[in-house]
Length: 633
Image (spheres, rainbow, N blue to C red):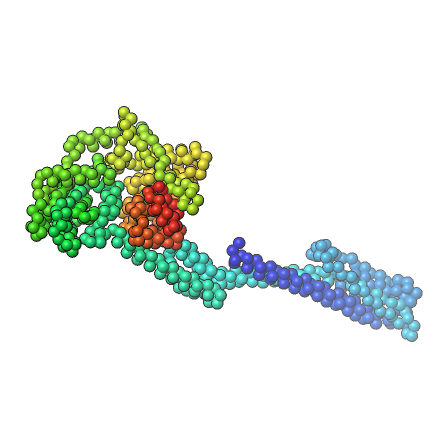
């Protein structure tokens, strides 16, 4: 029950008690007054009538006696008037037992009143001539009392209702700031650190509002500091400290996102082979200058040919250029330009053979696991060709392979000829219970030979078969949850194309309504990069999932995927860090600080932070000491 209702009931009860007591006292006072008035009226009538009858009482048979008594009695206020002579013989007796129907019997029984009776002696000269008795009819008093009770009740009821209405208005006005304080508290819990601008005039509530504003400002400052710290650490984790280029971990993340986007491009692997000889000939400062010069040359050359080209420095003599949306002719031109840049760099440093370039296409038939080894093979071919040369690896009969893949993917999806296995259990660090497992697809060709899942999903995405595949996987997972009695929770990946599909949400909503128990154990999984690139679509979809009782996990969260403000808006249930951030923690203070910052943000935003595929025991111990909620091994 709300505070306003409690106060309303309490004050209304007090008003009602006061009204009842006042009403009862008023009615009893009126009754007492009417009784006294009736007694006085009876006595006055008896005295007056006695004086009037005194001259005629000598002749007891005189008809004027009855005439005078009747004249008084006919006024209607009397129940009985009786005239007795000196010997107590009744000479005249008039009675009237009139009952007023306007007065209910329960009222008469509740407030009994004795009839007022008075008497007066009549003298005949110097001797007593008789006695007159007057009894007032109480019906008139009851009628007057009942009318007074009715009017008093009506006026009191109207006053009570008006008071209650005024009280409701006053309580709403007085307690309205409490609603604002409650709304502010809820917004703070959601990570929206606003303040109350119109402060209440009630001193106590004003103090609470000021305290809430102060807390909101401080939390806002804490979040801003955490955001700055997260951004600073993120930049350090992304960049190579020597060259200022993106590092190997950033390359791995960007390469995975490139495949998730189903975007074609080219990977240029550049190795400066002469670094080994330069190290022997020159000091460390000269080597650093050489690497910085090489990084500058590669970056300038790449940016001339493609605005979507990113240059990376892996380690030592190894660099890479990842160019999105680049076609074959442009890729060959860029390779030639990079080769010329290496030649110019060799001339400056007096080395004829400074390095070589291996080029490989990023397409649906490759995967993040195979593309880098293929680039190394292309590099080895470039070494054979000659100094500062390049080699572009082709896919042979790629068009035919894509056609075959497309037919195979369509056949497998249409026939649901794939299996679901549950892998990568995430363990709750505090009690070692399994938080969730991830649904993973297994596909086979017609001979039962396993197919590479990355290529299969990439082809399904490219030819818009991914929606049907996602729906089929969801149905299989829901069926599994319905047939499992344990409290198993399953995370399943859904593509961006699927969440944007107009018919998918209707289908999914109906499925969830028919399987409410399974819906509570279903977790929808999306990569942080995909969410960042299609933020509005995912924001709306995540709100839909939460309204349907389905939880959400953002996976592969790293230092450059989503901002803190975006996390506050999305409000996912889980955030799973990338493998790069979950491993190699020992001795890496920047990674540890980044994880600690993410953990603090998760606590403020009520988001569970998870680590992915923690391999080393020492890293798991660090994750545990930081206080992350869960981790997979």
